Structure formats: C-alpha cells, structure tokens
Image 1 (spheres, rainbow, N blue to C red):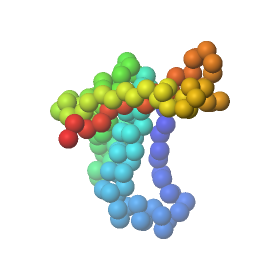
Image 2 (image 1 turned 120 degrees about the vertical axis):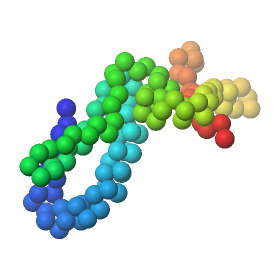
Image 3 (image 1 turned 180 degrees about the vertical axis):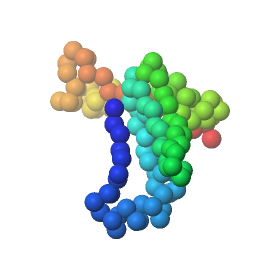
Length: 127
C-alpha cells in the first residue's frame, strides 16, 4: 500500500506550484498510474483522490483494477473501457528467424537448444 499525504509540505514554493496547477498534475498522475496498471498484470491498483471540502473530506475513486487480470486486454478493458479495447488488435511477431544469419548459424545471443524465444507481443490500434 502506498499513500501520499502532505506532498511538498516542507517546500512551500513547490507546494504553491502544485496547488496552482492541480488539475493538470492530477491528470498526469492518473495517466501514469493507468500505464503502470495496464502493464503490471496480477497487481491490484486502487487510486483514490481525497480532497478537503470545508471541514469534511471527499473521496473519489479515479482507478480500480482487480488482481485477477491475466491478460492485457482484461486490464485495459477495466481501465480504459471495452470500447477502447475493441479498437485494438493483438500482434505477435516471432523474431527467431532474425537470429540466423545468411549461413544459417545461430547468433550468440540465442542458445542452441532453442530455449530462448524472441517475440514481440502486444496490442496496436486498428486505425
């Protein structure tokens, strides 16, 4: 669990700058945590924004994932929405042929028994 409170409390100039640009800074933090949440499968993220209104506090859940996601598509769907994921397509590129030179000898970065697999996998936009 990570909690941030009294950010820049000891640095008044930075704190004033944060307060001045709070909406933009909050948006940057949410985007950054979304990126981590998409890539870190099996980890639960729960981002709650706590703001003070007069004498009471208001909690707003900005992002919530489950730790049951085992596919990037599942996590992206819960964070960015199913409509966003429907515009993506899965890509899988096998890089094994690139390890061989013209003489069909294996590059030194790969093992002879083929236990090292070089692949690029992910999602790209259909547009």
